[in-house]
Length: 247
Ligand SMILES: Nc1ncnc2c1ncn2[C@@H]1O[C@H](COP(=O)(O)OP(=O)(O)O)[C@@H](O)[C@H]1O
Ligand SMILES: [Mg+2]
Image 1 (cartoon, rainbow, N blue to C red):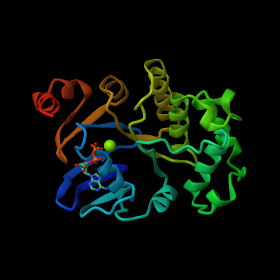
Image 2 (image 1 turned 180 degrees about the vertical axis):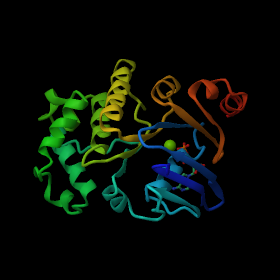
Image 3 (image 1 turned 30 degrees about the horizontal axis):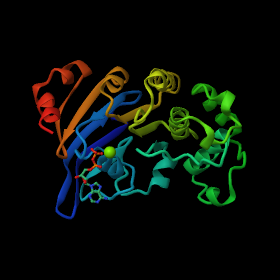
């Protein structure tokens, strides 16, 4: 079986800083893969290379066996690949529902959507479905900027799933979310994974969260994969413990 996402020997340097040094892994349909590692280990750079924000210096990214290395984010969106960023991407002046519709338009490739604002564009039903999935229906008409930080993170994640995304890369979805909302967020992501069969790759610092959510983890340190396996295997791997303690 071909993996949904194949990452092969990706390298990326910024001047003298070798941020990613030959990273390879596969992600299978329906899987939730976690990416962990100390600050500065290259996690976000790796995502940027996969999603077309950065061109890798070397290596290849394949989706459904097709080489997509160097495609622009908008081209990847049209193939059903999307992401969230470490920092919130919601528009505070738009309502929760409008934010979802706008995200859906962007994924479909209506590149002028940001200029013309969020019209329904046939995406209203899907926006409502996503609001329900993430238990945000009651906040549908509220401006995103008036939601709590945790609710905005939920909305931000929901936006990545609009317009038929089937491979979603999440960069620290739990970052800054309070402990009571964390359980909610995890449960919602699990529900989306179960019901839409969407595949996730999740960067996360919160170990408890990522170990509960993911079936498999890869561990980066200094731009390389130093360990991988089930949460249980990774938790007990002396190489991983050393990478965190030695940092
Ligand atoms: N745009 C950039 N320009 C220069 N250096 C960068 C840039 N982005 C990341 N880096 C460097 O690359 C390394 C990996 O960073 P990053 O991918 O953000 O790590 P992580 O997400 O694991 O914290 C760090 O040393 C960081 O300073
Ligand atoms: Mg990062």
